Length: 212
Image (cartoon, rainbow, N blue to C red; front, side):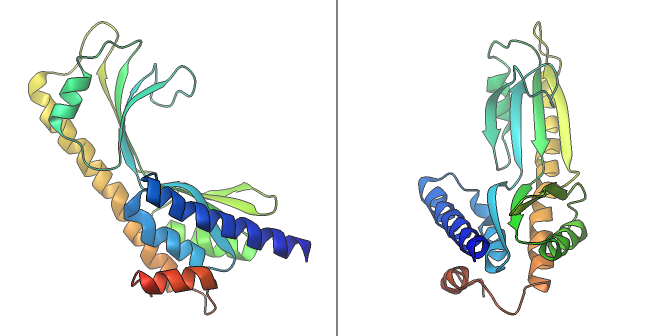
């Protein structure tokens, strides 16, 4: 009984935190329906998910973890003027425009649930997905292969011509749109695999939001 109680408590706390994050503006609202869909499943819930984003980072390489400064972040399409403004700011190393696809951290109760989640994810284009932690609960990470990294400047000078900024921004926004489309595909795949019995707190909220 201990595991059941721990699971229920952990899921309830994650559910409450979801709505707290929404209230303070921390949640990516365009994937709220996807997150609720995960919570509807009795054997799954999510934490720390991202709908896809465009960032500008000051780092040697776009995948660097250490000595990296994120100077701009947006989960929506960007404008040329926003990038032009950043190019005028002093930088320590290289300036990268990076587009990253959505990421979901899904906690599941057993391998059976992990298998269903991964099946839905891969059908939706989250090809870089897998079980990250085998503990209780298990952690399944869902990732797409959608990404773009564009070098804007090094420490000495801007490396792109001013007249090309609009083209680069257009490409970045197009990649972001492709990333966001994976969220819609994931929602469809999850709904096709929706269990008959739903987690009651999420069921009631989903009805209020018109998601059921």
